[in-house]
Length: 237
Image (cartoon, helix red, strand yellow):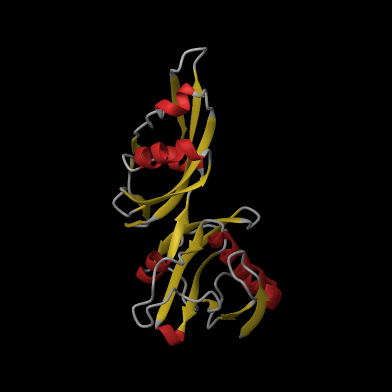
């Protein structure tokens, strides 16, 4: 039995086709739902994964020397993943394939509750290479190891320039800062913020037994103190 359908994940520029093929039921509950239910399970698992990951356009495919296209084929695997726990929640393997580039990314996703969210239980090497995990501020705060606070630029402090700088950090699988870019903030405070984030480190983010890269936003708040030119900087996380 096979069911095909279309959805538009947030990172894709055009609609892509999803094909769900099943040699055997993923669960009795899913089998009872029939074809419409299979569409929902597949689409929910893909959406849940895309809430937590994004296609990394800075990584190039070895075969082409270009970034991975965003119009590949999504599907749900036929196998029942061994990493899925024995619960009533749907748990499936989803795939994103660009056959002409020789790339096949796959994840095992367990849906939670109403299916709007899910847990990524495992992912393969292609998924780790081409997709970047995205952590919220609170999630990143739980795995921060070291923080370096920015130096308040003397000219900015003397001018009583207050403001917030948002830095987007890409963290390597080892937990070190791989690269950083400014999202927003006053020009005079940006260099100090970039210099500081390079001194941060995190515990490795684990998916199953493998560490993976991720990105997160760090906000530095600069505030001058009273009539003097002194100031302090706080960070979140």
